Image 1 (spheres, protein in one colour):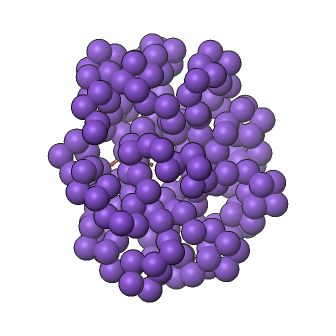
Image 2 (cartoon, rainbow, N blue to C red; image 1 turned 180 degrees about the horizontal axis):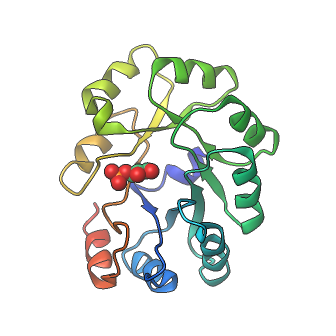
Length: 198
Ligand code: 3PG
């Protein structure tokens, strides 16, 4: 997972609704120099979209997001997803991803979650919901007991605050929907926002 996230600053989290053209959406992100995306399984089209994007845009890495159980993990892999992300921690799911040697970003929200996942050799986590949990000060507190943990904070991150998060030494990249909010089909605006990331 480190390899996939270490070269990016922002991981766009997408929920592609039916009135949004997935090809235009992904094209607009690619035009904005985005090369890794997370497509959430929050609607029944998620897996189809992953398959479609993989076929049409070999240049972009596609992960499945909001993966809540082993069934969704397996279906994501079958659809061509190159990694999977969960909002939280589930031991069986994390162990299954390990067993399959599939790049997986489990979610954590507490020291206990981190300790459980350390035990099975995970050290890169989605930190969710980042702002609601306590923001940067909470994340800073985690670096004391867990100096080896790296985080992709997500939840409440936007163009105003992402740079502060990225500046933290235990942040590998940040995730969020702000580049392409749910339902957004203003493709030019999406490219414009993506090009602003620096
Ligand atoms: C996620 O699942 O990663 C979040 O819904 C993203 O949160 P955001 O909408 O606050 O960026």
